[in-house]
Length: 111
Image 1 (cartoon, one colour):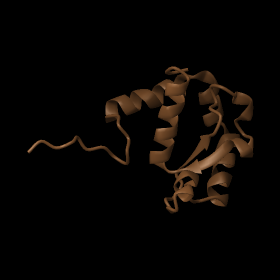
Image 2 (cartoon, rainbow, N blue to C red):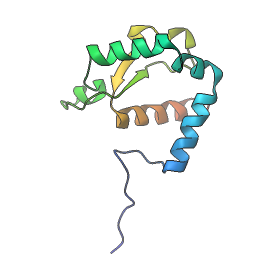
Image 3 (cartoon, rainbow, N blue to C red):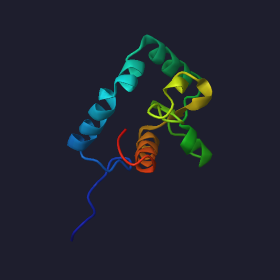
Image 4 (cartoon, one colour):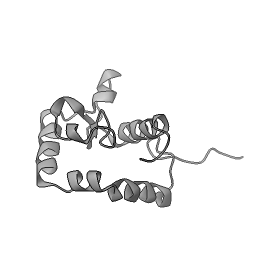
């Protein structure tokens, strides 16, 4: 009996395309510079320490551990908000993938 292809936590990309997506974002010099900075690592660690549960899941009554820090307004749109706490939210991997895909669709693809 045929079955639906498996997905991991709602992520719809295979490893090869997921890696290409990651590399493409990291190649953006602004994003790469920010994500590679000591300042970003410190801010990221502080956000995850202060709010260890995924904010998106918490709105639904779930308690999924946050593994990533998302820029509410994407870096490609507002790099000046990179370290502004009110623009950062802790999210689980699945919620981050969904939001990033939604951001890309809204902005018309990769930027």
